[in-house]
Length: 340
Ligand code: NAD
Ligand code: LMR
Image (tube, rainbow, N blue to C red; front, side, top):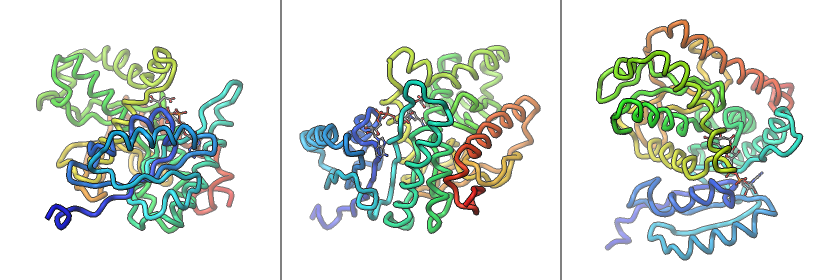
């Protein structure tokens, strides 16, 4: 009887599966945290050649967890095999910055990885695949992947800024003595980087305007905003490695809301610009959206014109994204603003 009512498994592809985020993420997906307690999953794990041995240890642990919802686990270095019929793809694997590497070198090294992954998703993934890019520089990697996947809609590619949103909400909760679940409508604009703009203009705490509940403009501008912008660096400094469990948790939250739906909650994600707020089309810029479920999201529209402070913050992060795009032009087809 159980088999008759069982849902069809969802194929979830994860790149960089043997890394630190992968280790936390796979357990959460396989346990049902991401897609719910009645949704079986197939894991399709993609690694580099040197990553295959550590990945085999992770898959031994996945087996040893005896997760009731985990139907199958595939490990591969072959992109088209790994992305085959994937309904969800979480692109975590990326080249970390090594000693003496300039920012531009990192951009280019990662852009070529994401160009190949975009092409493989285009060739092999389910036509309605939702792709979440976690690996940095996440927004520009999403742009590159999408530009190399002409048969998929750019809207299917999202860069993760959910961790920034959760960091911002947690900071507001701590400041106001509220619980984080009572903090709503925090918005992350722009890039997942130190230029991002965590915006409290629309935020509420227990339903009241957050800026009023905080009542301290200097704290917002001099403490809150820079702390959220630099939270990733603070964790690297303290832990000696970049955030991993919290990044995995944000990916779980993002995909759950996208697939299951999140009512009228505002969620931030880096998505292709539609030209609003002076952000040119073709940049992956974080904005607030709502999620109706089944992979569908919609931008929050009808917001009042940003005040001068917000407008200048939103413009600074836009400019950084433009310069990142300039750094990877050679990997973009002409139609996506590249050199062809
Ligand atoms: P990690 O170095 O522990 O793991 C990365 C894994 O990716 C490694 O196992 C590596 O073998 C693999 N990999 C590298 N290139 C690959 C490729 N071409 N195909 C498949 N696998 C590949 O790093 P991590 O801590 O797991 O972080 C991964 C990425 O996520 C980094 O770029 C990091 O900066 C980024 N990150 C993003 C956010 C966010 O909020 N968007 C937060 C934290 C970290
Ligand atoms: C984070 O936000 O924790 C990471 O993106 C930081 C990093 O540079 O890996």
